[in-house]
Length: 87
Image 1: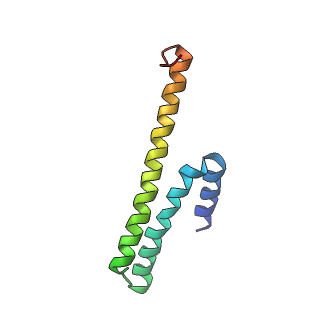
Image 2: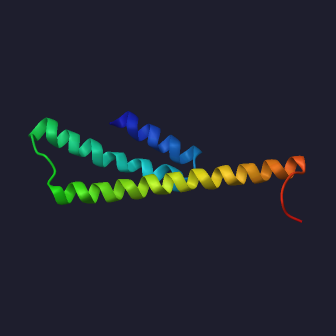
Image 3: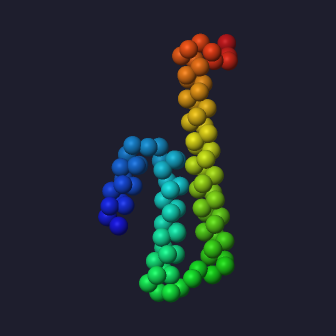
């Protein structure tokens, strides 16, 4: 658990928060796994749907950030070699 916190802090230090934070939603998966393994408790349907919505939102945000970074990198590379569309 402590190692995970160290890695999370390093990711926040080196990356953009808007990209790193959605991965913290993986704690939902681990919490459900711990409940199942230690207490033999399965999440009810409403909890599973809520967790799915939260995870889908985090994945959508990560996907969108990745696309925006790719577009910025392509645009700046085009500006460097003179192939950028613009003025």
